[in-house]
Image 1 (cartoon, rainbow over the protein chains, first blue to last red):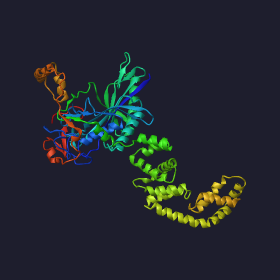
Image 2: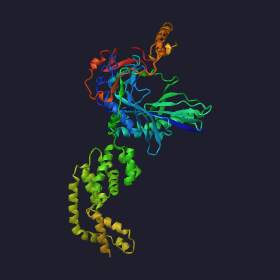
Image 3: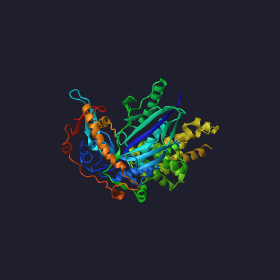
Image 4: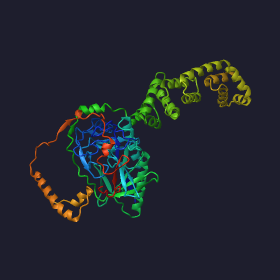
Length: 489
Length: 97
């Protein structure tokens, strides 16, 4: 039996605000004393009134604008009820029928378009840690600092077909969030959480209509599995691959899968049963009566749109089309806004001396080949770097020597332009006695000389290398070659 | 109007005895029935009565001081090392503590 894999993703992202979604408590709860960023609103005390945070809603809209969503002109909040200690009010303020952003899409590097159903605004819940005890009954310890932190939920249509595409989508969402400063989106810190919904269906016996998976004829759809507790982008792909294999095996053995929630176990690289979902969730949504309808004008939306910057996938296309950068290099360079900006500034500097394409390619080569590997926490001065690259382009220094100098300057905190001055000075000192050095090399390598004279031109490279070695790299290989040719005539 | 009080109670993690169920079910149904009267009102062309606020008038993102940990925990029946402590299993029943 052949199956299709059907994946939908729900991605939660904590947005980067100073205060919480509905109260003025500070948001930075990481490594803070438990229950020190809490007030009657996020504690859910009776009579407390939620007051929406403007910036949080702007960030939700910004994510929607970056993913081609339609932004609503009226914002409604709803109450989603469930009873659990991490939610002291007994309901989460969320959005039900009218999300802030709807009908968007993201195009993956392989060209596949992931359709986004909605992005809505809600609030995070408290952090609970569960403990088992021998002396008393099991208990949980709860810290309400995280309760009420702004959270957006991005929901795709069930249009994803491979684990790799799901992973690429999550990667792209994280990149957008970081580029636009919507969130740091660190999955290990829980700032971004991915929950895939996965099912496998017999080929040709189902169809997708308006984002819903429907059976064809008398086919009975297989239920879906939701995977939680995914702590990294790579785990998104691994968890889905594991589930597809598990579900295929189960069906192959004639067992019918059940609708369930499973948890990813990163140590064992498997998913584990958490609970079955025999009944549909019953959240008893109702309009949030404490928050008025928020009117958003087109001017408001335009103002937020001005915060958009060129996004990684747009940069990749531009680098490739305008400057002939390879896709791989373009992807690496644009992975973070900081690296992309460094690359673009370096290109601009080199462009003063070089043609635009060459400037971009040199900048890319040096960043990919040397700078990214060396840089670490240290910043390399852009003017110095462009100076060094230009010396290389002018043939005044070999690439090896230049890289060596760069490395030395970074690890020993030396100034590149000083080092270059010294290098050029010693190069010109050498130039005086370079003739002598070349003669000596020729004397020491009679075999190479006779080989060259016998027509083996490749030997030239060897001889140039010998001279370069003798001058410790402080001479221009082209000059050396010319002298050699002259002397070997 | 029929109402599944048992299900509603379970959603709120409240355990009801069969006697209580028998007692509460008609009571809640009566309440719902009286509210259902509203359904008979013709609301054609009536705008929903909901307060509106302009986006620009929303609260600016400026944090203010929270309660102290001591104040936060004052209403907690059980506490430990600055946390609120609740008894019960993760996905099972969380008993009222």
